Image 1 (cartoon, rainbow, N blue to C red):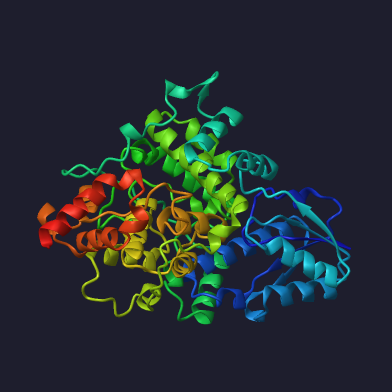
Image 2: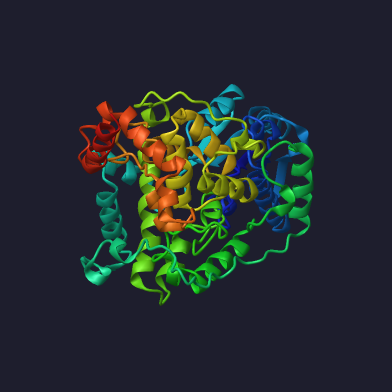
Length: 479
């Protein structure tokens, strides 16, 4: 009997296994012990569990045979798969390749131990085929994202006008990344979702099984089906894409979402496909600067991170600055936060505890910035992001956190540490009452201390020349 294993992060509307006439049964594994390896945000558990149950229900409605391990069975993934293979006498197992190491190897080992033949499909979460992204990184030992992005545009024809980029520019950053206007701007709300019986049941179950995990399951807010995910995407394109580019790096203390799409939670588990996202964004009349900025994140940065993860497994273990501070419990629980925690960090951390989400500049320049300035161990930081964020998985977080955010690779993914004092944060988010308050903040003091502490390592970085010169001038004045 040939079965297909549908992994939690592959909830496609049209998974290739669904059209395979040789498939007799479809297997789903919900593993409660897996969710206890880290204190994962309750919303992440709800998202993946409800999405899986909706997929299973859709298959059953189509007359397919579905076999499931449920959260309440309290089985590990390995034990759950072994139980299904033996109970239903599976002789061949098909699954779609998982982008995270070493999922495929573990499934294959379980199958080998039970004399089950294997059939592994190509990963469908990305626009770029595995062999092509691997080939590009093999040809670029010092890969630059901008080069990868140009290659993607030429390869796919997306936002191209013949052989030239649309608008005769590859990158419209000069028109983007502005702070919100002082008089304010109207920010459209996110769509309101009505939970069905399946999701309501999952919410109750998660609340019961994982009571000490961050977040409140009852406040779950994301789509869990391909249909609702497409509607969510369409609302973004119609209402927020127009101003996305202009304000993509802006921050506001009482606005967690601004003009962002918040599609990564669905895109990273197959509820949306890259092709659907690109099609929706490129058929709009939004300004080219906004469309290009959005497309760059989807077909450029996201796929570049996946390629980095595949090509450079060493990134999981790097610690170029030898940082060792452990992430304290309050980062996970939200309880007993230090009273002197800078207001941007406190504010963004509180919204992460509530939503399991913060947009990219808050992750990089508030949370990641503070982790790095304070000397937290990069693997500890990576584990925290994996647990707290609804869209976080190894393939995207390892290169983003270890490379881009924490500079743990010494400058391979990003050519400089992404650190700043209060001035940048004040410019982009008005976190303090005045510019002087930002200058006098703990953020600014931590910034100068970081540069001084790591001067020997950073001295050769040409992008930090001015900042290091300013630091030395401050030090000389102090002495």
